[in-house]
Image (cartoon, rainbow over all chains, first blue to last red; front, side, top):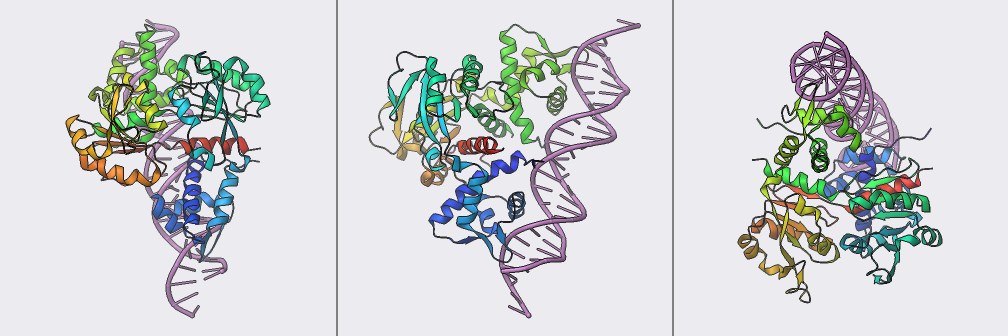
Length: 207
Length: 207
DNA sequence: TAGATTGTTAATCGATTAACAATC
DNA sequence: TAGATTGTTAATCGATTAACAATC
């Protein structure tokens, strides 16, 4: 009887987490939904509703304990798992992600890189060796990779997804702008940069 | 009396556009909402509803003209404006975006790069010279930049946004994981990679 | 004509907002 | 105590889904 949490709520949790971490760094002990909402441009009612989904974290008349709430949200998001990523496709975007520092602070680490281009196989990016894609199954098992990141061209995306699933990854983060199909047991998140840019274009075109 | 279009609808239009372009390349003349939905994992009712927001594009009993619908959606999204981008912050992510080929096919072009790091000012990325951030106002006017892309660290994001607005950009695409504030006349789209990754972590943690 | 498919209205579902009792 | 703030219920709003008349 698992409770279904709305995607909208899940997508706001990382914002709460990040702001709580900032507040913690400022030395703040207690924060109200009002203050949190002011800082994030989210209504306090929305924040309380989101948090209430997972339990009672605050104290009436007082607010929320910054450190405790941050930890609880981190746990809800599963950040304590310290997931290990493998990036498939070390082009410009894949290379940028391999260097992206904000992942580490959320508990993710890039543990393997793959490509099919012989020119870059064997080279290092951010201290991580680029492996041949043909070695995916073996290395993903050996390095205990949890998440496969797809940054290959559209034509290769589904094939790479299939290989990642066969290799046993627990989740897929797809940057190729195409629909890919994976078993329902493997969570998939699509990151489609052209949606945001097109939406911006739309809004800029309105009078 | 401007009709308010839901963000959900706007965010699906780029998917329709892309799939129609693919269908066009395949030589398809006519496509039904059913076929389009099958290819995109979106219900045909949803597609017809989205399109109906903007007018009557199809023919009952027949379907939609692929080329015509593609063009119409492109126009709704404002892609015919051939927007010119300036990327501020030529780190790994900014550099990757400067090289991102999918933008060109949507009518966007990267026309200027800015940074404050003296070591990279004057160098070229993808054939585009990196300018000093201090030259932003002058160069954005001279190069007729429409969109400012923010790929600087969180601490600098608001300052860069202010400079971009002062320089006259018509829209902002922000990759810094922080809330930035701009005048309501300047559309702002936030691209927060840690939301998707955290959501993936959440789903991977469920049972 | 019969079958296919759109455009649109009505029904349903889900998410946000408002209100307020509980309580620190 | 009085003021502040949560957690939760009810009301509202908006988006999706279902149904079907129109029509090619």
